[in-house]
Length: 229
Image 1 (cartoon, rainbow, N blue to C red):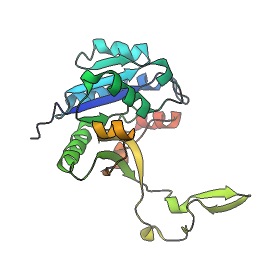
Image 2: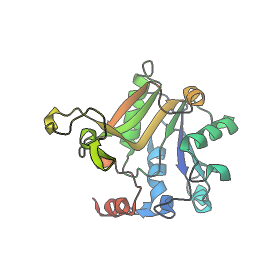
Image 3: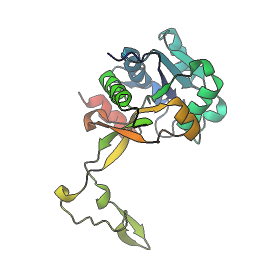
């Protein structure tokens, strides 16, 4: 088994504000708070020792009483606005808490509650085994419908191809595979992240099925998550 438990820092960002769903990160989803799905999966990982939660929500910070093995840090106000990026939050955390710095960062967003520990550990293993060829790993899911070639935009009142020069008239079998970021797992070498301020640098794809790729963003997503088995 890989012996890398001291090399990874898992970061779980949990901002209080949300435009579409109020207090999203602590809503009850499939029997527990949304954020707890990510907390529990990170704790169960064979390859993660250190986990930190960044939040401006006091009720989430109070979970430190339950999850004593996790570090909970109060997020600064300017990093808690609608315009603050997750990248900025992570950069600030690494720069201002050097004692937390590890060789690799793994970002686990609470909005992916169906992502399981098996996905986390499999992604880590694949990344570590190919780390000489890649700087980072990002989870993706295959696009079923609509395929990007079938998407349109409106210019001067007329429908035109969203991707210039790509026809939507091809059969499904002729279309190339396309993938979208499902938001479940991001891994990167810490020094590369500090330098690039991005998770995209010689990036390895980690393909997940649609079944585990629901990203909670709208009230409809919440309804779906609570009815599926």
